[in-house]
Image 1 (tube, rainbow, N blue to C red):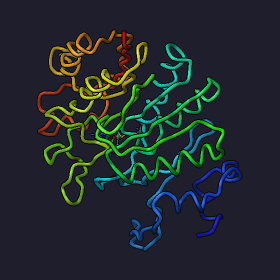
Image 2 (image 1 turned 60 degrees about the vertical axis):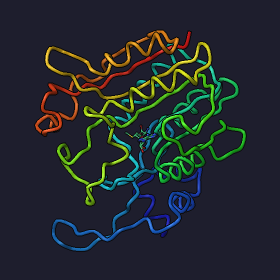
Image 3 (image 1 turned 90 degrees about the horizontal axis):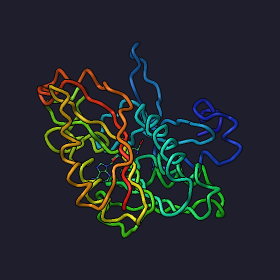
Image 4 (image 1 turned 120 degrees about the vertical axis):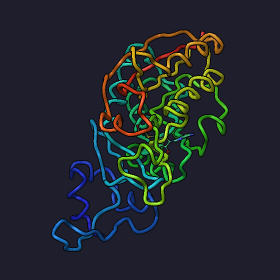
Length: 294
Ligand SMILES: C[S@@+](CC[C@H](N)C(=O)[O-])C[C@H]1O[C@@H](n2cnc3c(N)ncnc32)[C@H](O)[C@@H]1O
C-alpha cells in the first residue's frame, strides 16, 4: 500500500514523524483492508482501520461498522473521556508516577495521559485490556506517538480488570464498557450474536465492570492515589442511581474518599431505551467519578 492512500486518512503533518506503513503492519500484521459493497453496489476496497487525532496525538482503531466482538472502539465517549482525564489531572494529580488505563482499547486514555504528564518526572503507563487485539493497537499507537526511548514508559498487559497486574498505582483510570449488550438490547447485533467486548458492561444493567473497577482498584492504589472512572449509568424512575448505590459502601470498605461525582452528559444512547433490556431505565447518564485512597 502506498503512502498516498494513507494520506487520505492521516494528516500529512503527522506522517513526517512516523513510518505509517509500519504502523499499519504493527497493528495486526495482516491484511487491513476488506472488499465492501457501496450503496450503488459497486465493489470498493475499504480500510478496516481508521485513524483519529486529538491535539498532536493519533490513534489507529477499528473503522465503522464496529459490529465484531473484538472491535477496537474509539468514539464520542473517548473524547469525553479525554475531557474528564484532563480536568482530573489539572485539579488533583499534576505529577507522574504509576498510571494504569483499564480497558485501554486503542490506548487512547493512557497515551493521552502520558502526553499530559510527560514533563512531570518519571511516568510509567500500563495499558490493559481483556481483548488481545486491543493490546496490538495500544502498542502500535504508543510507539507511533512516542517513538523515542526517552519518552514515557509503557507496558501492555492482557488482563481482566486488574487480575494480572501487581500495582500499587498512583492513578487508575478507565472508560469501561457500560451498556447491556444482549440480543434484547442490540441495535446492531454482532453477526455471531456475541457480546461486543468494548460495549458489554456486564450484569443486568451494564454496571458490573464499573463497580468492579472501584472494588478492585481500591486494593491496588497507593496512599493519596486516585481512581478516575468515566462511565455510563442507567437512571431509574425517581432519579435512582443503582451504580452509586453499589459504590457507596465500597468507598468506606476500600479506605477511599469521594473527591468528585460529576454528571458529564445526562442523556446518551436514547435509542437503546426502547429495547427490552432497558425497560425500567429512564435515561443513561455519563458520569465522572474521582476517588482518593486515604
Ligand atoms: C468502551 S471501550 C473504551 C476503549 C478506550 N479506553 C477508549 O476510551 O476509547 C472499553 C474497553 O474495555 C475492554 N474490556 C471489556 N471488558 C474488560 C475487562 N473485563 N477487563 C479489561 N478490559 C475490558 C474492551 O475490550 C474495550 O477495549
